[in-house]
Image 1 (cartoon, rainbow, N blue to C red):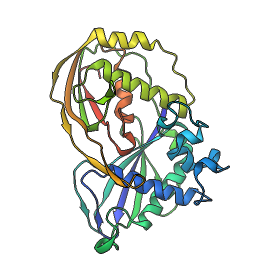
Image 2: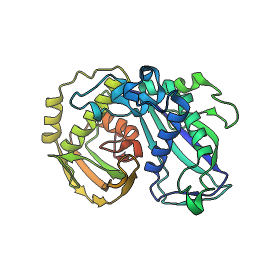
Image 3: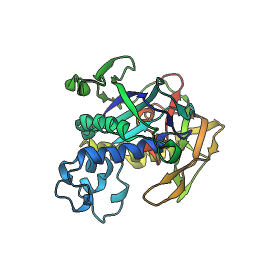
Length: 322
């Protein structure tokens, strides 16, 4: 599994008026801006464009079409190769001179489009984001202060864009890519998982707020293996049935304070508000956890469940041996 984690620091030049949870707004703005800077024929649908196989927008936002999946089961549900992690403080007003920080994760082949992505966020700053209509029409503008690529150790940092020149050190983007070793850990028998943003996991066709370990791992393995196969060219040949069986039999829940958190976003495409609630809080598992810990650590970066492009499904893992 290969991915990069970029930290974007934005400087407002006018007031930014944003919702308490900013993930949907940032994702929507990013999509519009990326299409503007990458698409040579904006009046044409991606499905009918002969350039879709080389287009940054098509690959990042229309992943199923880019991969040639048309009308096949699951095609529209191919995971996108990016995650936006907005600030979680609930702040809504940013004035000129303030800073707005966010993280952007790019997976596999999407790393090659890093310059397009940064250019899109630069363009979004000129277009405006958040409330930009009516009395707010002059709001929403910002400039990029810098983009920092953070290494796997969480300490190594490479400035890849300084807000003036474009990519400063293009090789540095790949040098800071994360390569996660999924060999089993040892000595881990108890962990606590803290879900930091609403997490939307379906079981038997319904979103759940009462999680067990096997359901979590089934969803996490599905997401990670699809990301690896579609975007990293890696096929995970694993005994999935045996792994899930051990998750059911060898690990139990010992404590949980998970709670449902309601959230909704407005869909421009559907022209209506959509419910996007999910569970948050802590849950503690105990048992034979060694083989699962590396994948749980990988999920800390790549999230779990639905709506990950908005930053949903973000969690942290705590415990001895983690």
